[in-house]
Picture 1 (tube, rainbow, N blue to C red):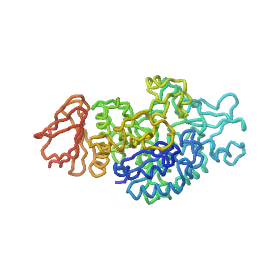
Picture 2: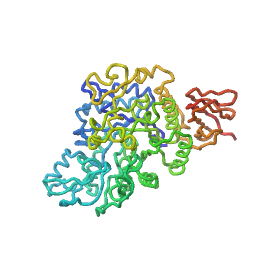
Picture 3: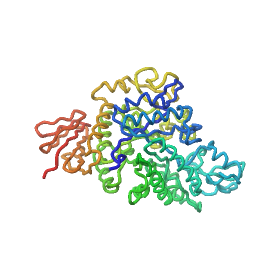
Length: 539
């Protein structure tokens, strides 16, 4: 089985992980100093949000040079050292790759906009227009995707923010240039790429208008119908599905057997189209249903059964509770660490890839930065929308709040920096920090550590098939992982009351949390607890 089908992924947002030089911004040298702790946690693969050269208007997702490290974060020498040290610790490296667009400060775009006759003009999507825009396409942030350029009297297209012009993949030179970028990093030894808004790569060649819709608010798993528009012609085009196969084929020649995980959205049939009918497209796609969790056993049972039906082997589901664009899941649980333990156990023990966002392992909480004072460009666009209203409507406007610095210790800046942090640290208790939680046996950090290591040490959990099982109570979820004659059985109590479950003979307890206890062949499950058992199939 390919290594990436059984790995675990830990996302680092470099701005907020660890500062080494006192400028208040995290950097690569800072990350280097924390690698031993990441290894101790049990992480197998580290995904880095962008640290390429960038104006920083969208905090790295606006790239001005794909093959340079931004000076904020260090040097290419630091990067090479980081890759080397991660591999030395038997972990893998995944880089965020923004193939859809560049910064408007990228030399390609500066040349493209300099003249209609520029050799780079067709690197981007330009259309004629007067006072009327070329068509009705709405970007993923709810504004028109068309941006007028005074110098050449034409519009360029951006499917995200106006300073992030989309590349034109109908130009073979663009494809060649971006494959060259992938080659540059693969030759440095990176093990894969997370592909940002990959469902936006191709747009309709005829520039047809999108049909209207009654739906306004997008969701993490569905951007293709929002802002009263079905994005039929600027998202999820068949050419993008085919391009996924091209990229997969291109990277497959490298000895490290790299993989691709795509940020895409849409129905399960759309996601499977990106994966390819023969599993020959993207290796993995982000599945965001877990972000909308209902804390009930039935929700998680339904999700498991849906994924087993729609994404059976050789496809591999992914389980995501948060990222740099989403509200932190501990806040959606009202800060209840007991429930966080149940959710993370589900995430790690299901068949699929668990993807952990930095700070989730210590229940890092949301900030309360108002949209008015936000640094996030989306917050700036909506600065007069009160924070309580955006939360009430279920839309996430100010992403600053999920990007606050990591809490390492109880020093004034939480061990993140000796200077003034780029985002406020916020209020925290000593018990919220990594250093304190490492000492506490029953802390969330140690729970995550147990899950990382349990998963890494069990071939059954890493490779086994999955079957849901019936239980004596609707608030208890039970599922089995099976490989050959070996069985791992998981029980999770989502309820507020103690529950009992009968155990088969010969079960060996692998892990328990929340006070779960075995007595005379019966499993006692206190509220928000769980247990994991190992056994053999009955002949």
